[in-house]
Image 1 (cartoon, rainbow, N blue to C red):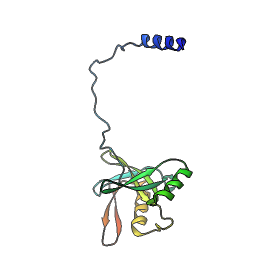
Image 2: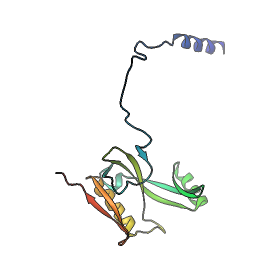
Image 3: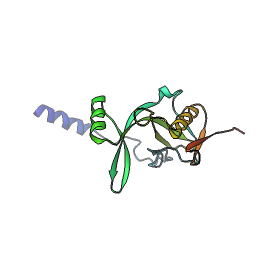
Image 4: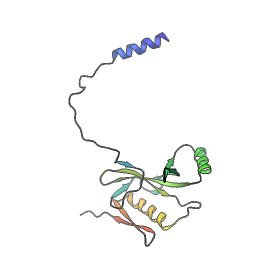
Length: 160
């Protein structure tokens, strides 16, 4: 025990301030809390999705939990046994594709799109969202909710 204390003391004694400490370095902020978000891109943002096909998109489990007066979605991590237990215990759970995207102004996020399995079978919202993700893996796109058709309208960026 005394040997460990002596080693620690000698390490601490060896610590010094580096020669270039506090020489007036400046820089630009690259990331802030506004650069990462756990929701889909807004209807005014152009974005790209990482990967080359739907197979490159990680699948996950989303759990809806009431926080205050609002239901919030949480991504569940852990091994398959833990995810199964959460699905059994929580009930408000859905399998999703976790599409990692970046907008044209540098904001990054994860768009959780419901995987069409089980009771959450495919519908036009899910189908068009999956098509948008696949399109966004190759081009800059944006989408708008079309309430009349109950689907998303997708727009591809044209270079001028």
